[in-house]
Image (cartoon, rainbow, N blue to C red):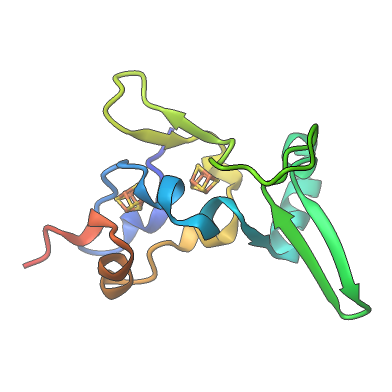
Length: 126
Ligand code: SF4
Ligand code: SF4
């Protein structure tokens, strides 16, 4: 299983698996996914993910796909349901790394974004 952020391939970035982004940045676990995420999940048969999506049709051209919404209670979650504690309890892993939302894949956009949001992934940069 991979670290939380696939930005690890960006030069100078090293995901520490600290979980800060998934635990503390509310738009990580309480935001909106786009149509391409939904399409990937439908094509992959990931009904286990799709049941956590609430689609709101605000107008004909304004449709929101909210995540993550508890399918049993209809409540917004307070922690991403896919965030796993590492077995050694020294960090976290994403349980859906291979199919996670695009915004999770893209985080952090760059070193400045990491610094602004409290991500230590670029802390080794000179
Ligand atoms: S805050 Fe940064 S270093 Fe920590 S898990 Fe998220 S991407 Fe990785
Ligand atoms: S889907 Fe994965 S990377 Fe995104 S918030 Fe949840 S645990 Fe973190």
